[in-house]
Length: 343
Ligand SMILES: NC(=O)c1ccc[n+]([C@@H]2O[C@H](COP(=O)([O-])OP(=O)(O)OC[C@H]3O[C@@H](n4cnc5c(N)ncnc54)[C@H](OP(=O)(O)O)[C@@H]3O)[C@@H](O)[C@H]2O)c1
Image 1 (cartoon, rainbow, N blue to C red):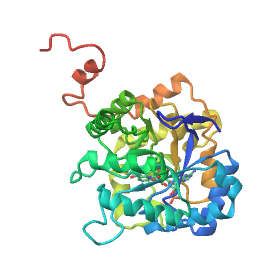
Image 2 (image 1 turned 90 degrees about the horizontal axis):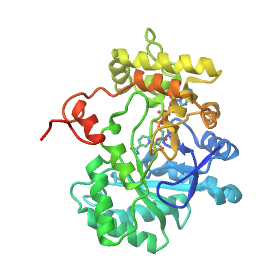
Image 3 (image 1 turned 60 degrees about the vertical axis):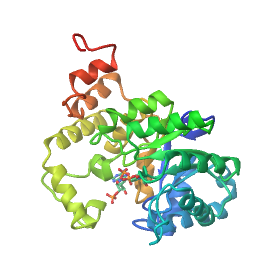
């Protein structure tokens, strides 16, 4: 396992993060604890959860594991999130001081700790002034409840605005952003990646295998059955399956991933994860796993080095397709020096 700094902070974290969205859902407590054991045994340190995962149960499962294994717990860098509703009241949601104060204390209680290393705003809140959120986060750092803070699912301008306001107010800066990012979903490269690079923010990509699509187990001519995430939800899962299955680019990407995996004697999952680890601004890739076997497979991505030619082949097969102004030729030119002939 290799280690990188957590965005622009001085904290060191494993380049693979354990995602725990399956805890209390697809993975019961025993399996979840085995997954945590296997992750730390493989050198993993960054563990990511959220208050809404299984309505708080994911945090509780992690809390009981931390309490039972104090030696391992001392190495863990713990990340959680707040923002989404944890109740039906009008203040049980959002990034207001009122909601976050309660949400953070509830997360700390479920995790059985007085401090989390990274507290992430799960999504932008258009109703709350960003200054109010930033003030809360800076106070939470001063109070010793959080070490750093970050965002998730923000647009590029939202990152830039938050960073600028934190700087103007003299508050601690955000250190990370958690976006969806994988070989099938590269849209963040237009706005979010440049904004993050500009601010020195580290990316923690979620759904790195696009929910399992990039693990190589799906076939064009074979619909998923009940044993996988896509098959388990007959409505949402099948809709997603049909939409992606009908898109030829999906299979072009999967063909490229599996060909490169075969050349390395690696799994498709490992290649898809290694591609992410090679992308600019990425700090640590958040692994999803329903079983210990899947986690062990995914941990094998650390140390898998793809050649420049392989990265080009994967990049070409999966190239984002927004060619409209200002993202097409003009957008590419703007990222360089200037648009010749433009006004
Ligand atoms: N910030 C956010 O808004 C947000 C949103 C979503 C997720 N996240 C975070 O990101 C983490 C990862 O997201 P994700 O679960 O969507 O990641 P993912 O890696 O794209 O998908 C994980 C799923 O793929 C399948 N899988 C994983 N490894 C496999 C392997 N080696 N072989 C075969 N199948 C494999 C498993 O599902 P099946 O076995 O059921 O097929 C597993 O549950 C979450 O745990 C959470 O911490 C954050």
